[in-house]
Image (cartoon, rainbow, N blue to C red; front, side):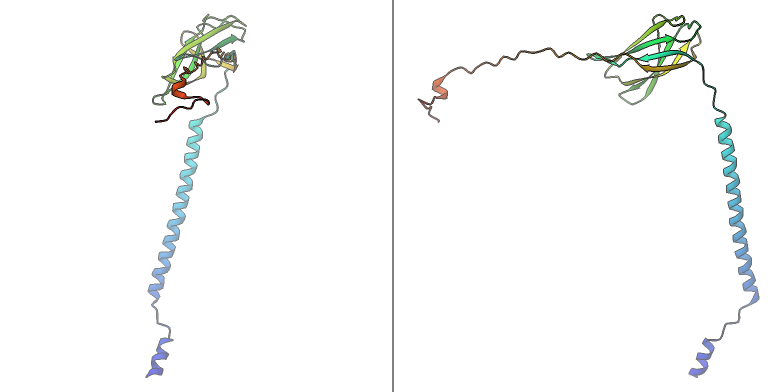
Length: 200
């Protein structure tokens, strides 16, 4: 009986053809689904790339440079900071109602706001210069940055170049005289080498 049992263990089970057919069809269906999903994702990626490039569009042409902005180092006076500089008209045309656009960052919440600062004089002939200046409270604003130059009644943005302007003047430290008063000579309290004081 043991011999017949061992023989039955090594006999291949008789499989049905229908079970193999179902397994093959299932494998084929999964392969087709994977390939179709891959093709769909590739097509969607290509569509998104085309849409992104269309939205970005061609780079806008650079505006011709009409002025040079010199940005001075911020000047700290007490609890106020003065931000300023010079604008020079480098074009051959007259620039009217010139304003410098500054980006200010608030200390409290880190929010950014923009401010238009008028020039003095506000109209610049060719090669003429004008100054701009803005006072800010130190506790309100942490930084100021030049972001644009605008001209005309409708504040049209124009091309500009910029460079560092005047340096902050060196702070002068005024000499202070410190007077050290000598302690009063109470030999009874302090004692001396000749007469030592008694300690309690």
